[in-house]
Structures are given as C-alpha cells and as structure tokens.
Amino acid sequence: MAMVCLNDFEEYAKGHLSKAVWDYYAAGADECCTRDDNLMAFKRIRLRPRILRDVSACDTRTTVQGTEISFPVGIAPTAFHCLAWHEGETATARATEAVNTCYIASTYSTCSVEEIAAAAPAGYRWFQLYVYRNRKVSEQIVHRVESLGYQALVLTVDVPYTGKRRDDIRNQFKLPPHLRVKNFDGVFEENAGLEEYGVPANTLDPSITWKEIYWLRSLTRLPIIIKGILTKEDAELAVEHGVQGIIVSNHGGRQLDGDPATIDALSEIVDTVQGRIEVYLDGGIRTGSDVLKALALGAKCVFIGRPAVWGLAYKGEDGVREVLQILNDEFRLCMALAGCRNVSEINRNLIQFSKL
Image (cartoon, rainbow, N blue to C red; front, side, top):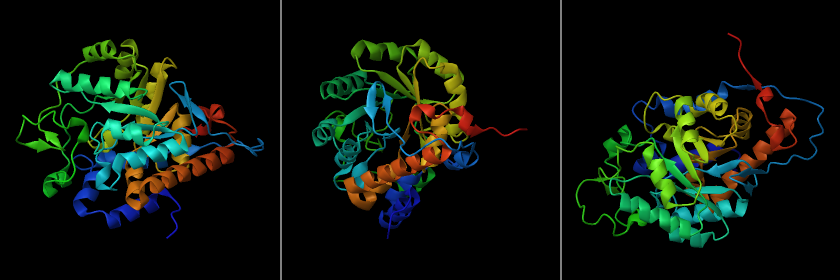
C-alpha cells in the first residue's frame, strides 16, 4: 500500500501494534476533548493565498535557536519508541539527522541519551527535561546531555501530576520486561514498589515554580526552552525569567482535558512575546497545510509527536524519514499554492479571520 499522507501511517500503526501499545500512544486525558480539538482546530482555519508570485523555487529552510534546519518541522519528545520499533529512539535520531531537522529526545526514552547521540552524531538534538523530587537526578542528566552535545534543554512544565488516561488504566499499561527507561538505569532501584510509566510513582516534583528556571540556568549554558505554555501570562513570565524559547503545547491532550487546542492558543502567546524569544508549537500537526497555518500565526517551527511513532511502527528509521519527507513535500506545495517563496514570506496576512 502506498503511504500518501500521515493518516496512512496512523492506520498502519493501529493495525499492527498491540491494543495496549496503540492505546498508550493514542491516549488523551479523560474524554480526549483536547486531544481531538488539537486536530479539529486546524480545520477551522482558512488561508488567503496570493497568486502570480513566481513560485518556481520554494525554499523551506529555516533556523531554530540559530541553527539551520531543512524545514520547520521537528520531532517532539515522545516516550518508549522501542514499543513501536526494536531500534527505538536510535532509529528516530538517524531519521532526523538524515532529513536535517531537530529531534527532541524524551526523558522517557527506551534508548539512553548516550545511545541516541552515538546513533546520529551529526544530528541536531535537544533534550526534554523533567524536574524530580530528587534534584540530583535532574542535575545529573543535564550534565550528561550537555557533555554529549545536545544543544538545548526542553523543560516540560505541564506534568506536576500525570493526567488521567483512561485506556492506560483499563489496560494496566506498563513497559514489558525487556524494556526500561534507560536514562534512569540504576537511579531509582532503591525505590521499589508502585511504578508509573517505567519509573517509581511520585518521583516528579509537583512543587516546582518559576524559581527552578534560575536553578537550571545555574547548572548549564544550554538554551532553555519551556514546553507546556498556553497563556499570555505564562509567556510573559517565561520571557522575564530569561528562557530562550516556548513550545506552545498541551502535551498532546494527555494532561488537562479542556485545555485549548495549541493552534488556538498560539496567537496570544506570539503577540505577548513580540519576537523577544522564539515560539514553537506541537499538537495536531498532520499536513503541510497545518505547518503553514502555524507559521502564519507566528510559530517559528512545529513539532510532531504521534506521527513519528507511526512512522517507526511502519518501517523504523525509513518510516520516520517517510513521514518527515511527506510533510516537507506537502509544506513546500502549500507554500507555493499560497504564494510564498520562502519561510520569511509566511505571515498573518495568509490567515482568514472569521467575522462575527
């Protein structure tokens, strides 16, 4: 079967992964309203294409944090890639290196940060960080990734507690015995007992505040990107605390059900930031048109989560490359049809705002 669009990879993954693994990847919190709205919100946005613009050559390149990437789509941090493909995150890393875009490695990887770096030594990598009750755990992994050449920290701030994912509870989801969260080998062994997504329960610190940004900045010279901001108030605080970027994210709809779709939250954050730091977005990106809409509303780059896992389930590294290539081709075509010759020509004039 020809894989024509990202939905084809979704259908393949759904048909070939076990029910518990599929449900884990697909899960949203509670009634999944936010997860589903991430997708539907893009469909409500209309474009205002310009014509007769000589689009014989369209350049999709852009930069994030000063580094050039081939097009403004990267891989969002998603856990447990070995559930989808035996090579797991190392395959994802090789695919993003080959396509020359950004891969955000998850804390909850089934390959270690060292294995990921070794698999794609020339790849452009960021690392997704959580803050643990035991600060030494977070501190040690920051030093590890900095020494390995990861180029930014993505502090995920929307998980003081894990959202209620009903299917995971029904399935009693846990990692199979042959897999583990490799970044924590030997770290939590003394804390035997109830486990949550591969690590002992209650290890994340729900008491963290903005002061942890200063603590992180004291540990590292890496840029700090905050992932999980949905309001202008928090966007302003992020700028005031000296971070280098924001990922507008609702965790794929896996945390607070009833959050806004990320594309609906984007404009107020971009307007608040006013170019002082870069703003990115994840959640609901499925087509090149979605990428174009997000950039038109002010995102510097977007990140895909579930589609990368579907690509892995289809054909490992080659599947992830196919997913990225399809998005790149679709994005280039949508740029041309909208009259944009390069990424800098994409702006809000492309968006049709409904009149009440």
